[in-house]
Figure 1 (tube, rainbow, N blue to C red):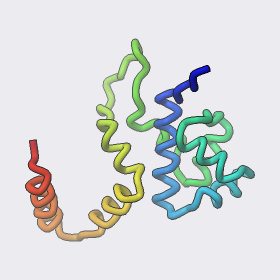
Figure 2 (figure 1 turned 120 degrees about the vertical axis):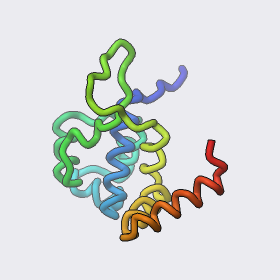
Figure 3 (figure 1 turned 90 degrees about the vertical axis):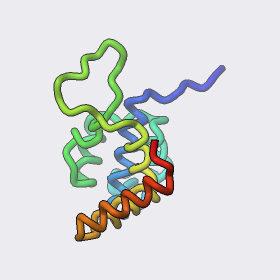
Length: 133
C-alpha cells in the first residue's frame, strides 16, 4: 500500500511551527517536553506527517508566544476556496526558505543591520551574484 502524502495545510502549519521554534532557539525536545510529547512527535508535526489538533495547536501557540493565526499565514488554499481580498500570501519558496536554519539565521542577521542603505547594497550584491531574472 502506498504511503499517503501529507496534506499541504498540515505541512504548512508544521513548517511554521518549526520556523517559530527555531526563531526562539528552542529544540524539538524542549517543545516536546512542554507539550508532554517526545521530540519524535514534534518532528512528525513539523513535517506534516501527523496533523495537529486544535487544542494542541493552541497549546503550541502559547508556548511559542504567537497567535494561532500565525501558523496559517501564507497557507495554500484548497481548490475551489476563495482566497479572499486580504494580502496575497508569500510564494511557497519564501516560507520554505524561512523554515530552514540558514534562512532564519540569514534573516535574523540581516534585520540586525541598522543601515537601510547597507541592507539595500547587500540585496543588490546578492541579486548580481544570483543573476537576477
